[in-house]
Amino acid sequence: MQLFGSRRNGKHKGSSAASPESGAGDPIDSIRTDSIDSTVGEETASAAVAEKPPVKGKKPGRSHKTLFIVLGVVAALLIALFAAYKLFVKPPKVVDDGPTAATGSDIKDPEENAPATESGRRDGVYTFLLVGLDRVGNNTDTIMVGCLDTVKGTVNVVSIPRDTLVDTAYRVKKINNIYPVSINNGGNGIDDLMAAVKDLVGFSIDSYAVIDLEACAKIVDIIGGVTFDVPVKMYYDDPAQDLHIAIPAGTQTLSGDNFVKVMRFRHTYAGGDIQRIGVQHDLLMALAKQTLTAGNIKNIDKLIDVYEQYVDTNLTSNNLAFYLEQFLKLKPENITFSTIPNNAMMLCSLSYVMIDIDKWIPMINEKLNPYAEKITPANLDVISFDKKNFISTTGSMKGGATSFHNFNLGYTPQIITYKEADSNA
Image 1: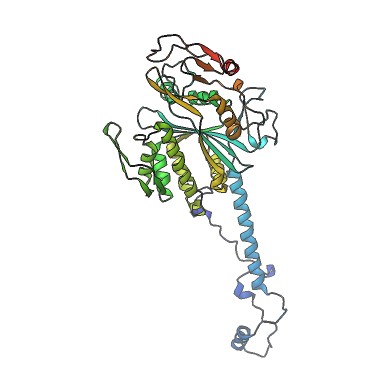
Image 2: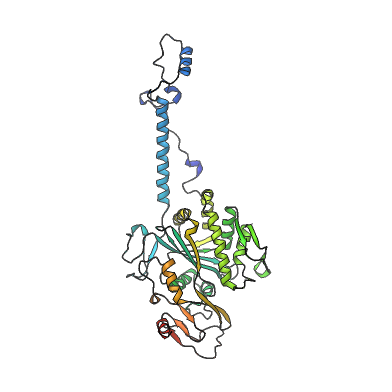
């Protein structure tokens, strides 16, 4: 995809030859011969012109003037191209329904926002949700919330473990179950997932991208592979998923296909899915460092093409160009990856990840909050389990405490509000 039209049409033809009065024309015709004696023949005159040394302090001739004109035209074209590029690049729309919003989910263009908006939205800050789909069952294998601060020049990304407990009426109350169940019930998947993420962070996310794993593979191949130190031997075979992993440990250049396999691998990790997320963060950091180089500027068109073909998103090509422009300005040390503070445990015969609310609130405000005002527990709908009762920031729970699949606690847990639990601690 060309950002500024096809290369065939990108060239500009010069104007027709100028009249003698204009002073412009072929540079050869601009050589001055008026200082040569009129008695000298034509051939002698030509030789004299060719051999005559330049006179010190003499004003530049027409050839120099022509050069200046050409340089001026080139400069004007560059300015025009830059202006056209800036018109093409457009920031994504932001959603103003954070802690200080008075009118709900009003959508405003950031270009219309003053540095301090009425809702308290910080200028130049954009939030996004990245979702990686498993190849089986539309499960959201990878869920990450990010915040780009164009003023500070930073990007913070926080992973939400796939087994995170969320407040939903569904019997399997894991966040990675939201997307496929929504689709199975006639929804589009992403709306319900965005709502669930809003419950966890306290504000609506501006942009989303649901990424087919094939997109990751193609992006890695476009930049020539990713050099990465694979932490453990990765051998796994699952014909049902058409998944065959055979990657040795150690530093190597991963192809797109092997990059995806390292992303998906979750077996033999002592720390389970949480350790897998840590490996994903390291892998994505390596990808970011190797993508954010001057050598990959030439690949922007190809990257946008892959994005448009394999990614379901509410971003336009203009928005994507904006993100690419901003990411290319970043220093690798200003990109951070984190995971929601959590505790993993078994609940009703399934593995769940419980958010540590005490630690999560400060992380939201430090890394993700696009508003000047702090996010508080009152902005969240988060549920945790303390091995006896449920702790809820809202004091309630959709479906009730016994609405879990295969509920087998043998008693009915209480639902305690977060403030209550905090005061009783």
